[in-house]
Image (tube, rainbow, N blue to C red):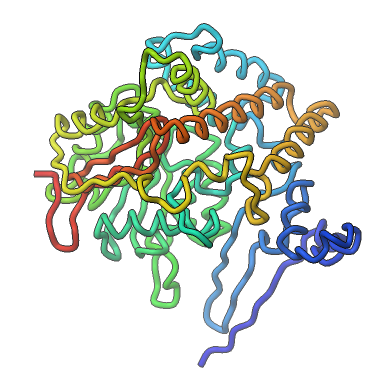
Length: 449
């Protein structure tokens, strides 16, 4: 039997402020909540928790490393605002982004015509906020009672991989991979080779850094799997590219998935056609999408207000209806195998982490108290010059998006994950991520004919 050793590298902050030390200065009635509360508070104040540090596991033969929310501190948030945008140009970028949206007089056609610029600006501005508050996987998930947000997100990603029916060694495409949280999770879970498609340079740079930390980076564009590295994959690649113009040959991938990403495409049909083109015949496409349900009333001003808040806060050119997404998938050539709205019957609503009335120690930063701390922390960091001017405005429109998502979910015109087993078909729900899945059930071939 191999002998395992566990090494936890020291961090300059943790040396003087471990969770147990932090508890010593907390009021007595709070100290009993350790370590979860102390970890949450230390993270909100800009210090990493012990659980957020990379942990090394070694034996005489090989070493691999896992990382969880490896960029958790306030200074990391401040330095990341703006992404690849020059720090003295962040405020100007915020103003240009805001002008695309209805709240600031923008038009839908302008957003669609300039979707690449709009979405790029959006993710340059918000990625560090997303990672700070939510983690490495930028999506929602249906949730069971007693399940943490992090656990539900992992399960949601594993579920998607299972519906695709992928096998070890197959080539999989992640359309709109963000910083690669789902990509890394699915690659390790299924032992597949995952290519992440993204048009944001900052997210790709950050994703490659996290791939390296997680141990799934590549040498010469890939990392080979060995029998010893059971949790690794053949390779993980991130390419800077556009949904509408994928730089791949026809029939390249064994499976394709998208997690709350194709909603950024200006034209669903064009996006789905590209996915259809690069997918091998008879293989599956699965997706979680954002869309509006039939409960949305375009003549209702409150509904329109909520829709506009979600669009500006989430970088969307428009939010399509579920039936529009389904029709686009069929027109692209896909066949729907199975579909289900996961928001219906979910023990906990998908928007729960964003609801200010909800309190959770494990997701402290998302609570009303945590968001209040973050808001004032960003204000202070911008005031002293550690965060670029415009950071507060980014935080403000993200806060507006959170309120819109919660309101949309409660109105029931934004449902969460609608799962569709279509031949490559994802389905969305109103103003909220809805799951679309397409693919084989076990050995049943799905959709690309």
